[in-house]
Image (cartoon, rainbow, N blue to C red; front, side):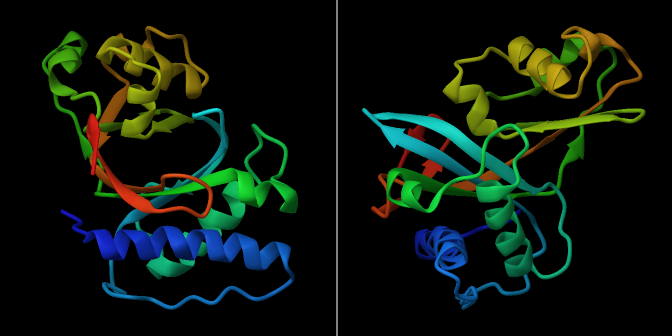
Length: 205
């Protein structure tokens, strides 16, 4: 289980923003690991446009499994979320003061073992579990906060996981499809360049 203090989480989000802002200003990132430099965890960076109290996704890229040095993965995810998410146009320098950064640190995904696929409905906790799918060449991942943002029930969470993998929404009922779940710790800016808090299930602290 990956544990981070609020101070460490605030540092991660600050580093993610600093990496992107330095990129746009033509300066090299200044990676200054605070604590836990040997963390073995997946990491995702999400960037949301922040306007009229609503956060609209502008980019989200990351790595579900540990890969090399953690801060290098954080750097790569931050840059990719800002400039390489194929679903969105790259973020502009002018947007940096209008977006909020979020960092999710993932515990290792675990295969959900069920006697029959319908049992997934009792095995997934909305707001706590993220999901991964694997079937042949198809794969997808949805972070736990996504289900909260769209107010999905578990079956909707699973259906959207299938859709993201390019499958029919009911494909999770196929016994050959593998579904994994994972937990993560999430830290987010309250406003652009504002305070940073930990997102915890259905509440924030």
